[in-house]
Image (cartoon, one colour):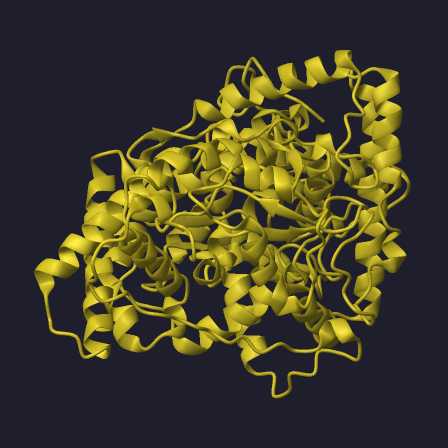
Length: 602
């Protein structure tokens, strides 16, 4: 008898490939059936369990007849207005000495993409953050390297020229393909120089080294940028939210090397080229909101970059926009409408159990001294009580003085969680996600903040040095994974370090929490017809939440840009480091899933 277990057993069996040896390639063993049954849709560059849940959530949101997201001010729906402007007609060139003077207000249109952002830095009042910009293409590498990057770069330039031609036609300007090509080649050259001025992500991991607080006068003095008025620019950005800039306002500058390099770049290019670049970035940022002809113009670029041949239908774009811009409100709606109260209690209990195990696990760490362990315990203890993690009925705060773990409400369903499925699956699913988010507070970035979310070095020299050594092990481990789908490029162990630390800590804590629950008298339900132990079920469900496949074009992009390791290496890397996994599946030492050397941070 298995009223809730039969669907779980069927799902697990369908997703598996039992013909594969779990100690050789556990990902194929756990996900082989899923990979065989699921073809990547033409609209998708990747297709995974997460993507399927997202698609299902979007269908639910599309069916909502009302935008009433609750009574609190934080739930009031917002209406997005898009603006776009067009390249200037060709005019006589302006001397470069005054290139950026007068561009402050024009640049405000691009503030979402390349300007300063309001950011909560811990428990202090909101401060402005100025950083190096995003680029038109997803990664700086696309601007320099050859091979597949050249194909993407050429498609990008063609996309730029097509858009410029349409905008000229809309202005009733004469068709001039030679002029458009000349202009857009200049714009791409400018963006290539900007890309070269940015620091690679792997060089930006130490947030304490990047963090520079200064007043507006110092900012203007250090980075005058040929007369660019920083105060006018920032005040113009803030005017939309009716915030008055104070004379003694401080900003946090993360992108100092970029701003230093920018001074030299703007000497080279005309005001026309820079204005055209700003216009291009604005149009690119808003392309999904423009008419179909603009989307058609990017088809070849999307194919080169993502491997996709069909655009998402319009309603999915709209729902995705609402979901990404009102995530808390949408999550609240989902929890209120589709998530029963007793399930909320079960999730709160899981949060409590995983958090308690994290604290207990600190005692196992020989690389961390007692002083630092105590501070870590205080930080975990500073998290909000799970009883307070309910649907938002009050205005959503713009900042919080306590660290928070956030996971999308839409994953509070199988395979991540169900009150009807065995607890082994719940701990291996949502329990792992909870542990992952807790561990993020102690990864290579999160460790720089205290229990109140303020940047503070609370580590002893001994513990900090050993943290770096433990982390280095993971950098090398993941950096040695060669991904055949991405032209056999290796995973970037530096840029994925934070997520890898969180994956490893999350699955370890969730498994320990499950064992503790069982030891304290928890009775789990059997799944018929599988012949698997509870412990094996935990690891199989952990792997199956990461089942997914990529198009080669997107694999090449994501290995450059994604801070997460590819799905299969998220599973293999974390389980290779866990002795409990080898014990559960009786893997001999020296087998791929039981390596001689293991890495552990938390």
